[in-house]
View 1 (cartoon, rainbow, N blue to C red):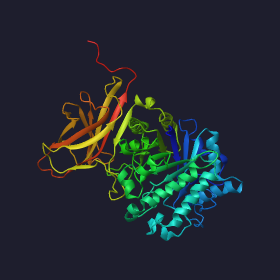
View 2: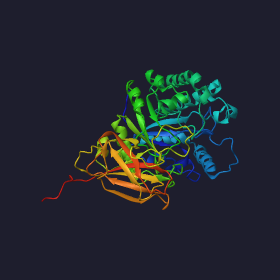
View 3: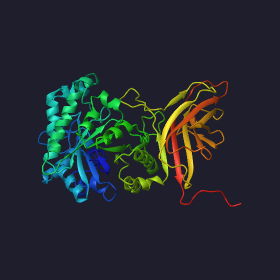
View 4: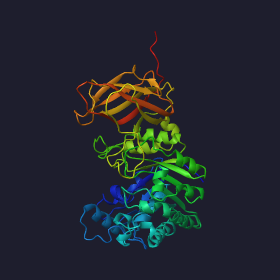
Length: 486
């Protein structure tokens, strides 16, 4: 049965066990829950594992860093001793969080990265050249850990994290084994569903983090449609872990349609960054602003998702982050507020596990008939007279002010719209931002197409230009916009 949720995910490490100094105080042990309490977050998901161990004292799996002492890294030393300091006082680190979440009125779901199984033979791991879930022992081990999280802890259920690899761990299957062993992976999901759904006295949930496109899931042996058709999962959350840059146009329509046809929930994930050091044009790591997160959330709500799944926001969570988490649950609340849409640009790691993206686009030479198409979605009703400003920003590398462009929005020329230029990012040499203020030609709610072509440039300048980033910014006022009285 579909259910509305607002979710926050904590990976147990970066903004928790790696941070605090042992022995861990209870105020620090409660921090992941308390920092989102009082917002719209009603479901807390905890990443209970990494490839090299579990972040609780499991009876069937290896604890994180259990085989890595003496420690050679500060965060690992902290993580081990923070957990141990709680255990020494009679507290289970995982149950501490579960109890605190329930005290604060939140559901608690434990998330397990499935490609890692610390303590088992390393040669079975796909990352070490093995065959992963082809080995029955691997499937049995992960099943036992998930059953422990369902039956031995007061969780609301478990999340099967298939989508952390390759950037966040090992794949469950080699690509060459994926087609043959996809039915085996489905049997594994059936097995977990049987354990969780059959739990008494209260049925446990089964969620799955999957890839945004059906092609990527199939490439990894994940037959998500069958899981949905058979009701094996209660929700799916599409994510590409390796790309942390917020994507307001993530292509998840297929997943929403397939899930809703089977009364299964979809929780859209909100990536936390505006830019990182893997983008073609790098400003380093910059966290997404509330307006950027709001734009992605509004687009996802337009696709009829059942909730939003936030994670890894700028830490410590401050007023801006808590305000964002308070807005996410209400699509009406975010509709009439400023938004900053980011059109996804491929990362430098083009050969990695990725999904298609329009940007960056290279234009080698000017030509009057050469126009490149950049599609995007927009959740705003651009006919609303409280929408005071709409701007399109384009980061173009290799361009100079003498270059002239032709631009069309949904077939209408933008030649008469005001355009300003500024330097690109930290470099004063490499390119420019072009900012077009849309006064007469406005995008429509839903699907849009921006067309861009290089019309002319200096005859003695032959290098190509590259459209690296495109952004759309909408700004609202409290009163209707209108002309001055005559």
